[in-house]
Amino acid sequence: MTLFPLFAETAADLVLAASSPEVIAARSVKESHYFAQLGIALLLGLLVGLQRERSKGRIGIGMRTFPLVTIFGTICAQISLFSGGVVFMGGLLCLTAVLVIPILLESYFISSEKPGKDQSSVNDTGSASTVAVPHAGHDPALTTQVAALVMFGVGGVLVYLPLMVGVAVGGTVAILLQFKIELHKIAARLTETDMKAIMQFVLVTFIILPVLPNKTFQLGGLNIINLWETWVMVVLIVGLGLFGYVAYMIFGRDAGIFLGGFLGGAISSTATTVSYARQAKVSSAYRMIAPVVIMIASSVLFVRVFVEIAVISLDFLWYSLTPLLVNMALITIPAVFLYLKLRKVPMQMPPQENPTQLKPALMFGLMYAGVSFALGAAKETLGDSGLYAISAISGTTSMDAVTLSVSRMIAETPVDQVHEAMQTGWRLILVGLLANLVAKSLFVAAIADRQLFQRIVQVFAIPFLGGLLTILFWPG
Image (cartoon, rainbow, N blue to C red):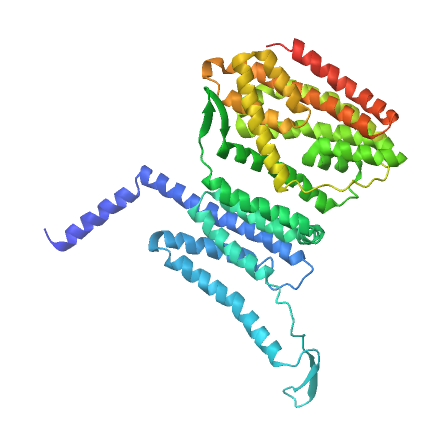
């Protein structure tokens, strides 16, 4: 056989193989995936570029350049799939040079001139002209340049990782750029005590948590404490409170009645009740709006409970959602009617404490461990009546501990017993919520006057009685 027929036969086989339905389908899927990566890179680049274009600062790159940068990152990553990571790294170095060199040249020319004085120069026609030179402390405004480098990386992430990771990172970049003023306000409002508390918590969380033993210590067959699990719960609760505190720092004290109740409930509904009771004692305006704010905060407590249950067991969340939502409505609907009557009343939120303080975090960890142990012991020795007593006692001070403990107990229940455990579980949580309403009423009675206490009892009576009826008569 000569060389040419052999080559022709081989070429024909390659053409037939390449034109087979399986190969065409695989190629089509692969090509569509590449185009999807490039399309998402374009959209994310346009999103960030639009934000930069509309920003009030100096615009170096905007709606045209950012999409090009992101697509460039995606292309470099796609090529690197077949040629190694050299192409992607080379593209990153080239982009860095393009962004950094103009800044270096500008800084060089600025530093070579005397700051704060006009410099005379001679133009091409020989006439003198005056150039205003920026001062030596000129801010090069690196945010846009850094954002461009990040978006190049986002383009690579779209190739190397699942697409949703790149979408999430690109969207986060746009949000960070958009909320510049709000983020600066938060930084300005944080006190030295706030910063110390946050840094203490970050230090303890990221250093202590990884080395804590994920082991349950037992005594007499009963679980006492799992240090790693307990601290994870602490991080969760403080994180929820920190979310509300950050929102409070953004909106400030002039948040209004609705946001005052919502943010107060996100941070701590019990602390919000105490704060407004104290304000109502000295101010007639607060005496009028305190009940509605306390009710809104108590409604948000249900949302907080849902989040905590979902973190531990989604199955338990779906099982308990309907009865808990019914009782949430019993407190939310009256709160809405009261809010509509008083929404135009001006109000300032009382000062809120930073929830990342180390001491309260440690106290919650001990409380969670204590409630978990008490529920386990009561289940073994006293039965359901003991469980309800523990939930009621814990709910007066912290719904977080009882919610997480009950959810954890159900998650660890054997499959053949989980249905019955769920029936008891949501009732235990609801008992804790009702006990929490009673505790808030008693706090108001101890702090404020009799008139406010009577109003709180009136607005809490409907959800309390409704909760009792739900516990007793809800079908199993």
